[in-house]
Length: 320
Ligand SMILES: [Zn+2]
Image 1 (cartoon, rainbow, N blue to C red):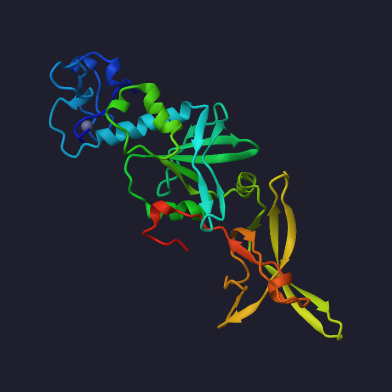
Image 2: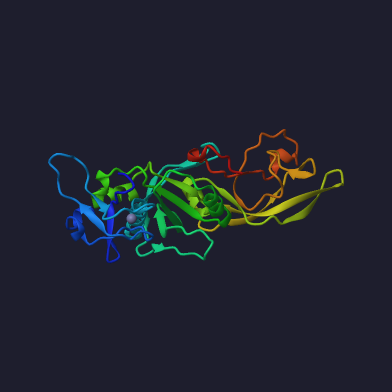
């Protein structure tokens, strides 16, 4: 469908499929792009000569109209807002070491809300409460997208704000599939291959989905711990407060992780080269083959690996 054709027309604040309205200008619909909002003509009569999907056309020239994109975006949003089920994307991190597959989630009835944030902030499309098995997301932001472009600054803001966000990409829905409510809803709610996670910030959700414990670091404060050695000396260790989320437990357990501490330049690092103390974020405990002596840093201390989401769709740009 070219950009001049619009799949849904707006009438009295409601989007309509072209099959639902009268033909021509009698459809009484306008373009859903608020910057355009011009009258539309419903081209929905079957043609014996040309086989093409029906559509709305503008009654007059409309340079720069984003009607198609606005229509898809708005209809997609409305479908999520009314849905009781939504397929969540599959997810993987650490080059596939941690992963879960795409899975249907139940949306809490009435939980969906259109999100309006303060000016200058991100405006995710819809916020829902999603439950799959025992894994709950109290706030899942769902973005509807109509192009394949990756918005980097948005992704970085989502990560910085610690939001859970997935994106559904409707760029490749065919004209035919835009004619039918159930078919279009399938693209929005059920397809597995047109959605991905922008970010998951919830440690309990990840832990349950992965069946793996997840460590959450909330601040960089450390304290000293002095340990007497057999020779009568004192070892000075540093430990950092952390939370451990186990898949089968409702409440996270607080603990102090003893930090392995090597110097690299003037930086303290663990044996993977991560700067210490650990930054705020989600981690898994790393297995480090040890050399065996007691208080050997590599073996007996808490060594963490940051959970860095694999994002094949953004292979162009490495994320720190
Ligand atoms: Zn328009």
